[in-house]
Length: 321
Image 1 (cartoon, helix red, strand yellow):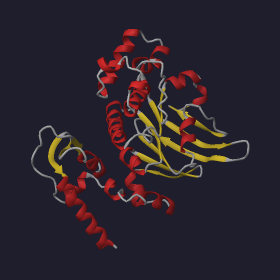
Image 2 (cartoon, rainbow, N blue to C red; image 1 turned 120 degrees about the horizontal axis):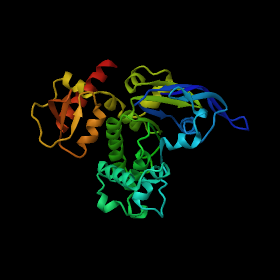
Image 3 (spheres, rainbow, N blue to C red; image 1 turned 120 degrees about the vertical axis):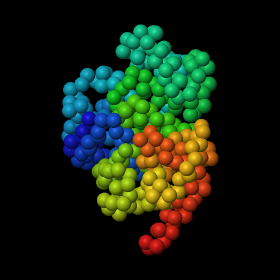
Image 4 (cartoon, rainbow, N blue to C red; image 1 turned 30 degrees about the vertical axis):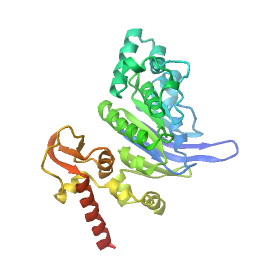
């Protein structure tokens, strides 16, 4: 769906920001760009809506060069969420969400119906929030509105540039879960920039690791962990003490016969292929999780289950050393 072909960016002082980047992002993929400061990840993201132009190389969306699209239409059809939430302070929540639909000449009724639908999706009561101003919202609520504004016209692509890095841990975790849910429901292609390894592992279908304007490795979280391209990749991820936890799946727990047999009424649900990091996030707020495979209940996991699993993995690592 999105293709970078030999893309480089050099500024007038001969400072190279990107060097011969080649990437292919699949339709419906949650694609993460991660790397240290100055690695070129935000520059790569901004090239997709032409906020930054490449010096050399080509970028394609749906096999069409982005320069062959009308610039205004290109940007209207790509959602964009920033770390700086950037809501218009003089506009209401509804007016902020409806900016692009109004520019696209949607009827007032259609705009408002869409706004109400989106607010309900993120558990914000339309009766309470439609007419509030951004100053009346918490940071997490403001970022929710920023996400809804990007989703308002059902774009095929959403760009997210470190959108949660300024939020408190609880709001950050909630919005990460929200984006996973939205991505699963809408199957939108998301390109997401972060420097947070935990966030990359939690959200990404694939992760592209960048350094000094170059793509070092682009693969699934598990392959990057177990088959790092070089020492930089290995150190970049193993520096996080919880990495091993995040990369194991709930299926690994089943292999050790750790799940409980009882169905817990009202408990959150995770799939067998979700990772143990996601289980940990859920168990911060509840006592047990129901696990499904192909939409069928197969067992439940608790704090005790997780502790048993960690103990087993620690012993395995010791034996392997």
